[in-house]
Every structure is written in C-alpha cells, then in structure tokens.
Image 1 (tube, rainbow, N blue to C red):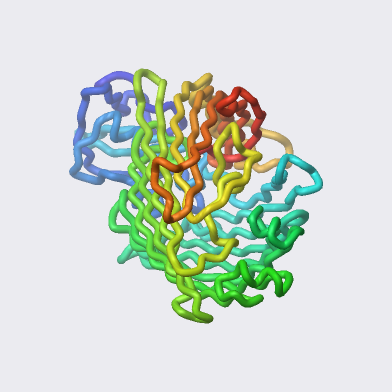
Image 2: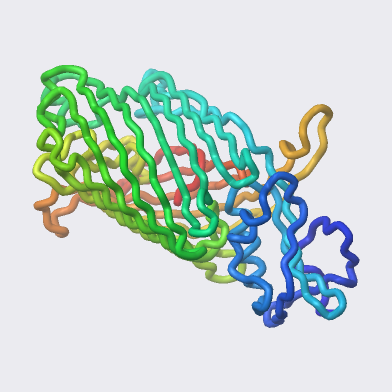
Length: 437
C-alpha cells in the first residue's frame, strides 16, 4: 500500500485497503479502467478524454490532469479518479456525478453602463441530452440589440473517425458600432443580420483539432445612405463564407486552468466574389497557464485580429470596447482594420475547490451540487486598434491594471468582480460573467 487515497469521494463497493495513494514520485501500471456514476452519459464520452489506458503507467499528476479534463466537459458536478488494486491488478476507477442538464441563464448587458442601452434575455441550455455530450442552445435577447439564435453541437457525430458537428441559425438587429459611420451620417442606425452555417471538426487527438465551416449571412442596412458602409456598397450584403480553424489545447481544467496552453488559429474567407464582395478575417489567440509555486499561478494571453480585402464593411471591422476590451478602458470604443491585445494575470485561491452538495425538498439533487472556488487576482491589459498601413511604432496602446475576485460555480459558470485603473489612475468597477481568459 502507498498511503491515503488521491481524491476524496464516494466509491461504491471499494474498501479503503483496496485504494492506492500515489505520492508525487510514485508510478503504477494500469490494467483496466472502470467508470461508475454515469447514469445517462455514455461511457465513451468519458473515456475519450483520457490520456492513458490499460498498459500505461500513471502518477498522481497524470491522474489529476485526466480528472480535470473529464470535468472540463461541463456535464459533471464531481469527478474523481482512484487507483484500486485487487488480485495484483490495478484499476483506474473514475467516479462521476452528473450535473443538471437543462437550465435557463438570464443575462443583462449594459452598453456604456446605461440602462437605456441594455440588452437582456435568456440563454437556454440543454446539455448532454442523449448522454453523448450533445448541446442545444437557444438565446433570446431583447432591448438594445434584440436577437435570436439556435445552436446544436455534437462532439462525436462519427465515433470511429472522431468527427464533430455544429450547426447555427441566427436573427438579430444590431446597432451600428462604428463611431466614424455614425458621425458621417449624423445619427445611429441598425443592421439586420440573419444567417447560419455548420462546422465539421476532426479531433486528431486529445490536444489537436481542426475545423471546416461554411455558411451564409444576409445583412441589410437600415437606410440606403448606410450602403457606403456595407461590403457590396448597396443596402444589402449577401455573404457566403468559408472558415478553417485549428485548435491546440493542453489545458487541464479548461474553464479555469492551472496548467497548459491554448492556441486558436482562425481564417474566414467572406463573399467569394458574390456582389463583388471578397475579404478575409484572420485571428490568432495564444494563451498559457502555469503554476509558479504552491497554488500561485500565472496566465498570459496575446490575441491579434486582422481584416484583409479591398472593401471591409464597418460591421466586420476590428473593435475594442465591445466583446474584447481593455480593463480600465471598457467604456472606450475604438475601431480599425485590426487589433492587438496582451493580458497577464496572477491569481491565488482563497479556497480552491469545495464540492458542495445538499438536499432540499422537491429539488433534484443534481441542482444542489456544484464545485465552488474563489480566487483573488491582479492583472494588466494592453491593446491597440490600428489600420493595415500603420507601422508598429505608430500604434496607440491603451493599458489598464487592477485586481479582482473570481467566484467559480462549476460546471455552470463564474462571476468576476474587478476594479481597474487606466494609465492616469482613473478607476472603474467591472462585473462580468465567465472568465477573463
């Protein structure tokens, strides 16, 4: 025997004396793998996330990494991995507890921090609905930017070839983001966006994936005068598109990693000559996560978006202050052909992992289980928007720094409370759902 068990939890039918503890330098050969607790989830959905199998040698670090990768699927409220020995055979015992799989998530987005420019609605998720990690998502938004979208995702539509499928449909009315266009016209105006597409993905292995997507967008400007800001220079753009992507992901817990890298390379060709529209969008996103000492971790990110073509419409320019922004400058809106962003954060857990579970009358137990955490962090962001013809030394970078708390309620979401400063010390308080990166 090697000591205490690696993870706490309930392991049905297992005696304490059967369970091995793997200390940092201990290694053991796995003879078999067993999954328990998956009431509706197909076993192959769990097994395909693992980096080891029968005949492989594991240590505590490998087991911890695999536990987090399984948890990253977002369909379990608890994952534990133990090594159990019986008759001199070692079994990797994976214990899961499934999370609630259908829930509405209300949201509120304040543009320029004003209620008069608020977008609100419901993000309805139905996850793992056939036990195959499939997701149906319907988002309905009202207010400033009304929209509706429907998405279906199947990570294993073809198991033998490891092919995934994603299909989307959407309808939205979007207020113009370009301050230059608004200044030119003298007033704000809307675009009507409708369209959809599908993407096929090929999982090369646990860390590498490639994607090919096609689709069609219909964009209608509110008024003929706005046609100078469309791609076709008419009121209506009809834009077929082709996308090619590559993802390299070695993160442990993808929602809030302690270790690993994420590299995303995206290329989208838009128009293909229809209505004389032809331009390209390229995006590179690099992220790295490292433990420094103990539970102190650092992460950094660099992202670059570039548009190329003879006439890129204002609605597809690169913007900061909307989806991407610099903390300390969130209320500032800048636009151009391209943007460049860099971020770095140090974080330390106030408490790292607390598996909460309690019972309430008439409430399913799956709704009362979650993995909680709270982390304090300090950060710095910098970024610039620039035109294709600009040189690097002419970029006007905006920089912000600050601190904050991130509350994890996994596998569901997180909420961040941050206070940031700009270069001259002016501060702003930020509340955000999800993760900074």
